[in-house]
Image (tube, rainbow, N blue to C red; front, side, top):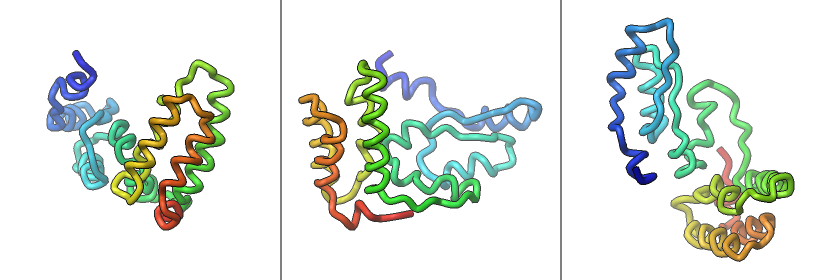
Length: 161
């Protein structure tokens, strides 16, 4: 299977998972994949079926800022209200450290979690282009993130949840 086919096969059948969770309450059931919003997540968790979790990994990579309020929305935890500028500063330090302790770690891999941080915002396409072009040229990760960040306006960088 290609990676695309692997993400789509087999078809997702939530009704079976919900039925199993109801029929086997002594077991733990977590939905894996296909959920794209808070509303869908809440529906899966609060429909009385006994499903206790929902995995949204690829969706978080596709829209990380959207999911930045997940702990407050789903679990009532306080949102720290960190801005994307702060996220990128913290991530730059983290990425630099990780690249130092694991020299085989590729730039594409370490930059993937922040690739779509500005999806739908002004400058997002240029931001992604800078990440891609500078990583292809093997620039230091802090320099890549700094240059990509410069493509985004202050208003979008400083937005908080």
